[in-house]
Amino acid sequence: MLCLWERRRLLVTKEKKSRQVAELSDRFSRSKAIVITDYKGLTVAEISELRNSLKTVGGEYKVVKNTLALRASKGTPAEKTQEFFIGTTAVAFGYDDSIGVAKKILEFADKNEKLKIKSAVFEGSLISHQDLKAISKLPPRNVLLSVLAGTMNAPVSKLAAAFSAPITKFMYLLEALKNKKEQ
Image 1 (tube, rainbow, N blue to C red):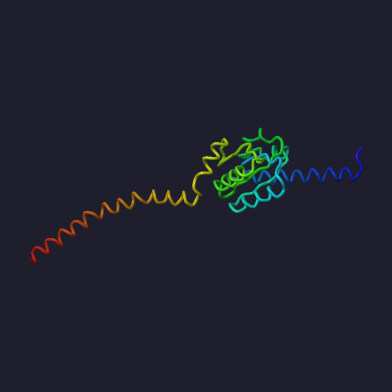
Image 2 (cartoon, rainbow, N blue to C red; image 1 turned 90 degrees about the vertical axis):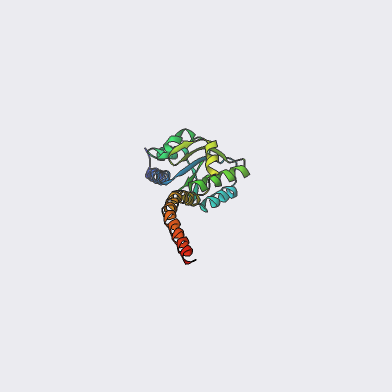
């Protein structure tokens, strides 16, 4: 039989774990990009450097317990990555700029061989390491949106020019006739 202080300790631990699972599940649900990594061998300073670089693009890096991550990932896009929650595990979350998070993680992994990328979920789809590299080479979201807007605007501009061209030619024709009559 457990004594009172042991029961309280267990209760606090269960409450704390359930709170951690809820927070992690919320992060998984809100994330547009989820990168699961193995951080074995990284120093605290290196992990802090990675966290700071991810914060600049609206991302987050969190060391997670595999059992809690397995529970939290159920019903979220991260559910596809459950087989990768083994060993030392940390997760990079990208909330706003998912391409920026992919770039920062890959830049850090290139500089530091200790960081291993296990898996990634991008916009709800499980992707390979090569796909993550390809995504990281894309321009930022705002640049892609401006290119899209320019592409969508081009046909409208050409159409307006096509409609105004006959009127402009007609005006030049009238001007030429006027000049010819004056001479």
